[in-house]
Image (cartoon, rainbow, N blue to C red; front, side, top):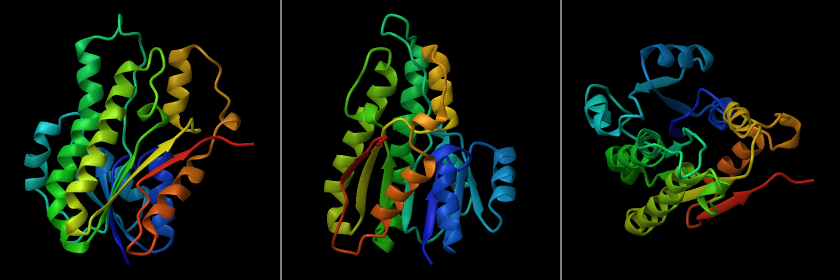
Length: 229
């Protein structure tokens, strides 16, 4: 039985991944913004444990984790949580830039740093669920794409640094996926939302599990997945 720490399990791709891992009997530690959300996650995933800390405030994650008891062994750390606010460069304020970079880049970096000892001990796996925006930046996506480009750089550097410690690192770049975040994006774009046009969260979860389940000695470094016919 493997032990997984998952951010973003309350919605979309994160929920799908947590459901798949729970169904096969793995141990889940679900990251929650606050105590109320932690309780909701425990109700949704019976038997799961929770860790509480606001990813919007990465500078406080060390303090938050220091007042809890994280697992002694971590087989995978799955970074799935994220935020998005669209706008042109001429419209985006420092507040939006800071909030986007904090949640999408700085928090994953800090959480990885804090949990590296457990990952090294187990020869664990860090998975960053990135975005197609982490490879290409389109108009109105500057802040989000910058955070995701940075997340790719974080993963690439981490992979080289931790290879000798047996830690695998994977970046997954989903295209548009039928999730509450995608519905929000459509509202910001002023477009009608049709979930049937996009990939399911479960299909992206399959790519995450594929990376996790590769035999030792193999590693998916980067994997793009797009809506298909």
